[in-house]
Amino acid sequence: MGKKNFNTEWRKVAAAMYIKPVDSKILGSVDIDVTDLEVFINRKRKKGVKITLTHCVTLALARGIRTEVPELNCYVKRGKIVERDYVDAMISVLLKREEMGSVRVPGADKMTLVELSDFLSLKIKEARTGNESKEMKKKGMIAAVPWPFRRWLFKLIKLITITWGFSVAGISANNYGSFVVANIGTLGLDTGYPALFPTSNVAMVVTMGGVFKKPAVVGDKVLPRKILTISVALDHRVVDASHGGKMFRYVKNVVRNPEILDQKPEYA
Image 1 (cartoon, rainbow, N blue to C red):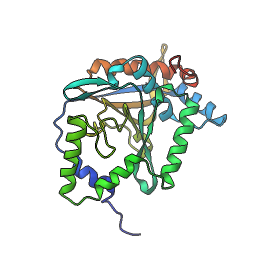
Image 2: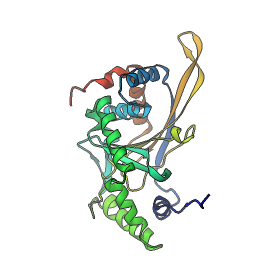
Image 3: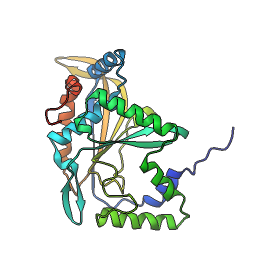
Image 4: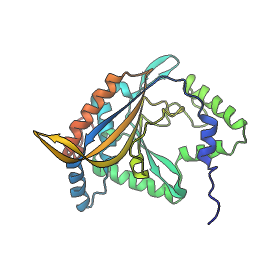
């Protein structure tokens, strides 16, 4: 067995990027009963629609941002809160070489489950066959810069794009869309709290943990149910904990009524 390469492009970029956290953020988690949702997903898959919990949660979050909590679609630009005029999702996916990548989904709030499934399948296939996204290529460019110039370059890019609100070399404050979703349950983690990616400029990063059978009260009975833990990091400069609560009340309602994700929303 050959020696494993721990010094990947992402690790090089992370070493230049992450420092002791100083920004204000809110962390929280919620347990959601997905027993009936998994039945719905299995029924759809038998019909040839390849969806997972990630598709459903992403779509619910996107529509929730559009209709219920637009504050989560905002960011800080030159000391002011600015709202985006679109809802794009950024989904973390497992690519080749056991490395994580990401796929941006433009207009995720206007999609149906079938449309999201088709879009993600195409983009993941492209990434795994060598057609990397623009974000992945930019990461590789930064990783190629020698240390310590790599950290200085990252700080300069962050200053120009995040602090000043300008674009440089195709990099802007909006490269990561409106929010980020990562299913860490598929990697073997039960739960985990995400980081607010320093250059993403999003107000919400969501992680999905594993699904486990747990006792839950249904009506007046205690029954075994499949429970999904979702964790979130919110940018406290933009939103408060109440916005996160409002969002996940909406997500829970969608989980109870997943059929609405098959339909185009009225605003689409």
